[in-house]
Image 1 (cartoon, rainbow, N blue to C red):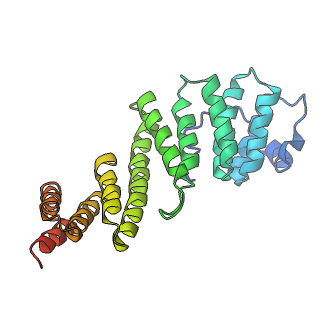
Image 2 (image 1 turned 60 degrees about the horizontal axis):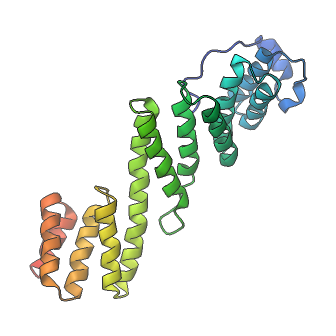
Image 3 (image 1 turned 135 degrees about the horizontal axis):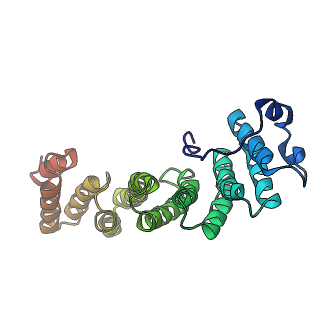
Length: 252
């Protein structure tokens, strides 16, 4: 994901010539006596080359060989970023979680939690399939917003929270439409009510209200259908679903 590496602090780097001579071989270039600055430089060189797996391995070597160094802190979050870029999501989560265990109050802690949430978010699939990743991303985005309010990553989490929430609402809508199409009107109404009551103002809400009008009319419950249409008109006046509901209620 472009931009994940934004904001890395400046670190000691060996010369360009040394990097060019050593980079590209994974952690094979590192020995017990390799200075921490050299390992960090190798990791950064691999990031620049787009070889994120090797970069993560070098960052891991920093943590392994120099666990109490200042660089080790940045190496852990660097590994989490690199693994995410490589779409190695379990490894990214593990590194980010380890960072939070060690450094929960640092400036990079919100980023670590964001990477954990993002590892689930980036695996969200279409609404017709299992949504466990969507649900898990929502949980962590919510925790981040509460734990680190006012940060850049809280703001980014709010944006993605809304998208993920709409995804879950879409799943409920998909099931509700399935029931509606097959004449299981009560079950359909239950699903549409979940969208309205539990998911707030998402892009799915106006249609959910309209579908409730359809389902109630199919059951012969004109009063309930009118109440749903009135709620739709009050909350989304002029919306295409509101206009369709009005036409439906008028017999158009």
